[in-house]
Every structure is written in structure tokens, then in C-alpha cells.
Image (tube, rainbow, N blue to C red; front, side):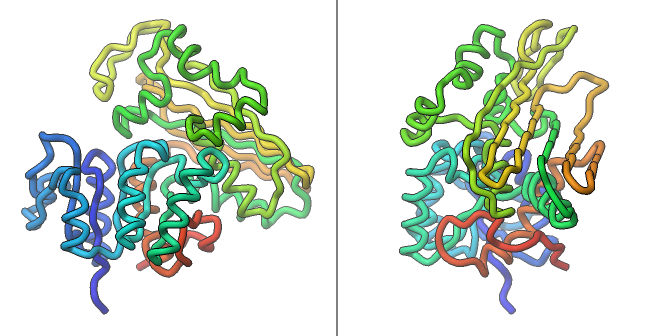
Amino acid sequence: MSKIKVVQYGCGKMSVYTMRYAIERGMEIVGAVDINPNVIGKDIGEIIGSEPYGVKVVSVDEAEKLLMSVTPDICIVTTMSLMKDIKDILILCARLGVNVITTCEEAFYPFNSCPELTKEIDDLAREHNCTITGSGYQDAFWGNLISTLAGATHKVTKIIGSSSYNVEDYGIALAKAHGAGFTLEEFDEQIASIDRMSDEERNELIHSGNYQPSYMWNVNGWLCDKLGLTVLRQSQKCIPQTYSEDIESSTLGMVVKKGMATGMSAVVTTETENGIVIETECVGKVYAPDEFDSNRWTICGEPNTNLVIERPQTVELTCATIVNRIPDVLKAKAGFVPTSQMGELKYKS
């Protein structure tokens, strides 16, 4: 069997693991792309901490030429968190018939936050017979684990989830999306003000392609799709997080002063026609010295079940999930297909 050929798009923190994991699973990295002039021209071996691999990073201006010349089976996109920020590479890959798996959090289930752009990409992918999807940490720890627990429950009335992560681990785009380094006034104006919209105003913003969902917004949509639930209403509330002392952020390149936003807590509540309420929270911020990642979920009903995972290695788990999902993407139907429709996440030896 020939090796799965992979192009890595985005050669920052996450790619250190996605590329190494793909290589160690017997895949072949045939190209790499980045926007950072300090990275362009480097051999990917230098990025992942190994011997030279023989593949050098090219600029985004050369992405189309690269994809056409190396004809990869799949492109791993690890750049930004919103669909509108990665639309160019998704559209390019769909037009060229290249499968894509991305860590973009909105791409996990973009149908409820960016429907027009998602449909455009879906139509292109169908036309050119390729599959586009979003995956990562949420696929396992906010998705499949939760649907499995629900599957072991006689009656579910409510699903409650809360997960925290250090924005320092994921790069500047994610940190800024969480309001890290904002004054409280800036946070209210740029992030929290959207929560005060009416449902009608929010729907208009969603269909205009300018809505900025928290990560759980798309997770709740994924869970409803996986569990066969029909959404009646969904709302979101973003709350700034602060700390009692100054915290230095290497990702932001600044000191987040006492009283400034270190990040945010975003709570998403979904009411369904089935009578089940899903209430989820993600807390992303620049961590203080004593803080760590955690993942806590409760399935309420008969019986109640609590899931608590402390100190998950979120970055590594995200990247391993991406690599383990690649065979599922290659076997999936054409179009923009969420992993909720690809079956359970499995270890591929």
C-alpha cells in the first residue's frame, strides 16, 4: 500500500506534533506552507526537532503551485480558529480536489455559525470529490466521549460540560480570539457585546458570515447532530477572566496587567425539541502559575454520570486526534462532512 501523502499548512506550534505524528504513523509529508518569513525556507525536520527531512516550507503565495505539483491525499490546516480566516485554503483545496482536516475550532461544526461559506465549500468539495472536516481535541473530549456516555444512559435530561486550556499553547490568533490582553472595555466592545443581541440580530449576523462563535457554540451543534437532537434555541455569554497579579504572555509578547482580561469563559446553552438542554463552557486564558487544563462533564438523567479529566495534554491530544482521523476523512463521502458523521474516533495502529 502506498503511503498517505500529506501537506502541512501552517508550521507553528501545532505542526510540530501533527507532522511528527503523521511521519511516525507511516505517512509522508510532501509539502509544507506558512506565512511567517522566519519559517519559510526551513526544512521541516528543523521544525519537528529531527534530522533534515528533505521538505522545505514554502510561502502561502506558492501554496497552489505546491498542491498541484505534489498531489497530496490530504492537507492538514493548523492556522486560525474561524472559518472566514481559513476560507482561502479550504476553497483552494476543495477546488483542487484535495481532502482537508483542520484544527480550526469553528470548522468542527460550522453549519450553525457560518452556513453560507460552509455551503460554498461543501458544494466545491462535492463537485471535485474531496472531503473537508474539522477535528482535534474537541472530537474526543467534547464530542465522542460525551456521546458515548449519553449512549450508556437510560434517560438524558441535561448535558453539562466545562473545559479549560492555556491560550499560550496555541498561538496568537487563538489568544486574541479569547480577548487575552484586552482591557475590560475592549473585551466588552469586541467580544461580550455580541451576546447582548436578540436572536434575530444574531441570526442575521450568522448568515452574513460575521458571527464570532465561542468554541462550544460549534461543539453543541456537533453534539446535537451526533445525538439526533433538534435545536430550538442557542445562546452564548462570554465573561472576561482576570488575575490578581501581572502575568507575562510569551504568545502575546506582552505583560497582561492586573485587571486586564487574561482570556474568557464562554457559556453556550442549547435548548432542543427533544427536551434535552446542553450547557457547555470553555475557559481559555493565559494561565497563572497554579492553573492547569481540565475537562469536566456531567450527563444528567437516569443515572447521572460525571467525567473528570485533569491535566490532559491538550496540544498533543489535539494533534494525535487529527492524525488518527485522517483515514476516516479519506473514506468519507465528498463535501464538508463533520466528524459526527464519520463514526467513532479510533486508534489506528
